[in-house]
Image (cartoon, rainbow, N blue to C red; front, side):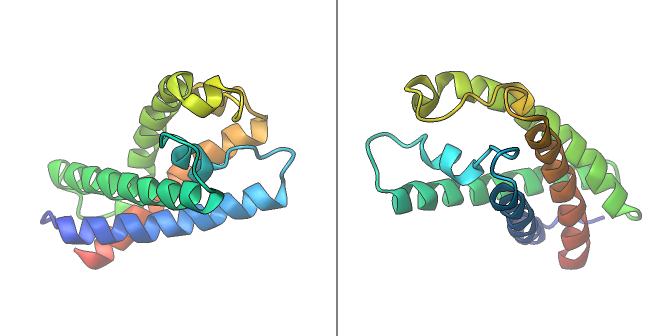
Length: 158
């Protein structure tokens, strides 16, 4: 499979949009059990007191950037493993690895996150384990969905 950074970036953006839609439908539908607001968490990493719109704009920009970076990695892995068929299934496998990376990073970043230290945000912990179990499952599901969508979109765009 040829490596296409443009196709990977496009796949990452489209997969990120699909996952964000699913993530926020769950967030708004089950506010008591689904407690991770990803855009707000990322946006509050910016220094200073910002208006809510700026927090969400920064969080969205960070999220899209991360989607592109991970999709480039997925495409690189697809190239390294010479994936030509079953790219959807490989995307799930890559999504599982992505979940491990993000799960560990979430625990590390949360300990240093200013809004968590000030009490403005709950500490999600590694793999969101400090949050309700539904959130932990959704965190895993989001990464598996991202992998599936990235694989499918990359296959179409490369």
